Length: 284
Ligand SMILES: Nc1nc2c(c(=O)[nH]1)N[C@@H](CN(C=O)c1ccc(C(=O)N[C@@H](CCC(=O)O)C(=O)O)cc1)CN2
Image (cartoon, rainbow, N blue to C red; front, side, top):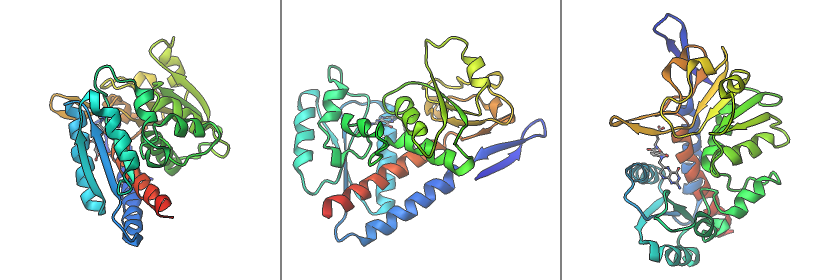
């Protein structure tokens, strides 16, 4: 599923059409919400004034209204963070809990994300949900990693492909590697990071490159082979606008996911698919 337009040099830029993927997920969510006898509820807990977090929460609010899902933001102090999560865990009217990053100073991610009950962990960051991935159990996979898998499944046969993931975060790089290794997907995966030697050599030898480093325009044209598929997971706020981790020149030789309008909107659509899935499982 790709769209294309003329590049400056007369070649054709092939962007991967993420909008249709996000749209179809949202249509499915809307239908499933309407089948429930109650309105599902997502609560997002935030502990900082980080601007990109605020932007993401605004996107969540808009999407929740569009999908008919109740949405609440709870701003809490570091001292009350865990007790807030404990209350939400017990609240039968809350189906999904999202914990915004970055966490306030001094809070341990493992401790905080473990306080989100597995059955309400709609972002898939509870260590138990992450551990299930090792067994091929993807009840609540991390949304961004799942979004990348959906994009790849829409544009190519993953089996046997050489995939390089640049970035080894707990919520994207590492779980995505496990998900692509799963039987039935069968990719050959390399995970690179800030200490990797000869990164360009590795990425140039790859059929698929996934970039999730949080550095604007990080992946350059000379780091990608002609005809590769490049998934840009980055979402960086630079000079008042969003841009990705992939330099625009890469579009001249590879199929690329755009930013904005790429993986990010599929990620959010999947967050809400997890909310309605959590609600369906909790009502049963
Ligand atoms: N627990 C989490 N906390 C935060 C996340 C996250 O994914 N999980 N994201 C960061 C900020 N961020 C990415 O680093 C981010 C900022 C803004 C958006 C956003 O507006 N997304 C739009 C779509 C954008 C696009 O089309 O690409 C949307 O969702 O509609 C997403 C992520 C903050 N904390």
